[in-house]
Amino acid sequence: MPQENRQILKYADQPGYTPDIECYLRHGGYDVLKKALALQPKTLPDGKTVSGPEQIREEVRISGLRGRGGAGFSCGLKWSFVDRKSGKPIYLICNADESEPGTFKDKQIIYKDPHQMLEGMIIACYANDVHLAYIYIRGEFVEGAKILNRALREARAKNFLGKNILGSAYALDIWVHRGAGAYICGEETGLIESLEGKRAYPRIKPPYFPAVLGLYMCPTIVNNVETLCAVKHIVAMGGMEFARLGTPNNTGTRIVCLSGHVRRPGYYEIEVGKATIGELINDPAFGGGLRDGRKLKAVIPGGSSAKVFKAGERFKLKRRGPDGREVEQEVDMLDLPYDFDSLIAAGSMSGSGAIIVLDDSADIVEALSNIAEFYAHESCGQCTPCREGSLWMAKALHRLTNGQGRKQDADYLIKIADNIPGGRTICAFGEACAWPVQSFVGKFKDEFIARGEEDEARRTTASGKAHALQPAGASASGPDTKAFVVSV
Ligand SMILES: Cc1cc2nc3c(=O)[nH]c(=O)nc-3n(C[C@H](O)[C@H](O)[C@H](O)COP(=O)(O)O)c2cc1C
Ligand code: SF4
Image (tube, rainbow, N blue to C red; front, side, top):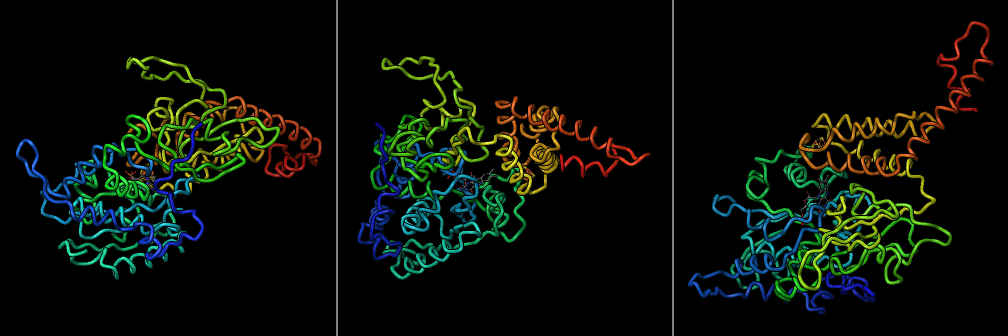
């Protein structure tokens, strides 16, 4: 039976554990930083000498760590793209925007164990020759920003930050920058624009890959809060040991945010791929199952932008058998291991690690309308397909949830959604707003059509009654009929 394996959240919820530095130090805090700074240059069998920072980068590569912010991109590979020859400063930004609906893991780290995040950041900065780093925190985390600023002051006072850190000659400072509460500020290039003091318009890639042309057009690393915490654990246990946690290509632990119609919503740290979606929903150690008398209807597996799974959906997955050979297996959605690759193979993603559960009491049209409204509100507006498409989809869904739907709205929604992603937009928000519509309408089409038909039927009846109620000479299709429609 799968259990939590708390590495990052090891102390966060222990009684008496506080976010101040003294408590962190009592629990071995900053020992890993000391270890990192003490690494001596090593000569390899081929005669090449590798510095301490290079050794850390190699450990991160070996660990197989994949970013916990959404895309699941290899952290080691990302660091290897950094332009180290440009002569420009290299920056590191901790992405603490945490704005994907359903996601609330970074907040736990920031509020309960901020020094762990700082330690991970300092090690990552040391490994990448960064001397100035930023924490970009979402505007709504007012208390979180205060906690981090306090933690930074404490770390400076103990010389974990500043000049000549712990006598190592290494210098670093970190600053907190508060966002103003826009989802697009979590997208790394939008975040960089915002940090530069501008409107958070994402930049086009190429050429603006942060590793080459990031903050102030300098090489920049953007990593998620949880990813940076994992760096600390990789240096503590070694890359190989970290890679033994989880499953091949999906290594380490990750924090899963479980919300919606489960008995025990919350955050759970698991070894990646060691629990299935079904176990996370139903196991007493995790979600504890649905409410009495309820049946599962749908699962959004990786934050609101991930494609929804319908209860009972089955997928063909390629898995490696005990003899090492690849075999194709058909599995129920609930039996999908919660890892990066299985969910991609099933046509969705584990994204930011947020599972949203919908039971049969959920109105699927309402649920999608809610999501679409969010994306229409948050589109930055630079690209026509995203700006217009997200709005049209939200309007059509608003119609369907307000008695004004049409039978053809389901096809209309799919048509719009199909024309947003696929390289037509500057950033992945295009995909993020289209995927929920494509999957909700695609998988629950009968419910969307039925809603449109009901609305049309109601309007036809209403317009008949309205006609009967019209004074002589008035038209039943005129603007006044709306009053009758509403009252019927
Ligand atoms: C619209 C949009 C919103 C995003 N929001 C966040 C966010 O709130 N937090 C985050 O860490 N990454 C977010 N990302 C992903 C970042 O662009 C980036 O890939 C991530 O911070 C890299 O960190 P990682 O490699 O450690 O995952 C978002 C991406 C998009 C397209
Ligand atoms: S895809 Fe949407 S959010 Fe991204 S840049 Fe274009 S308009 Fe802005």
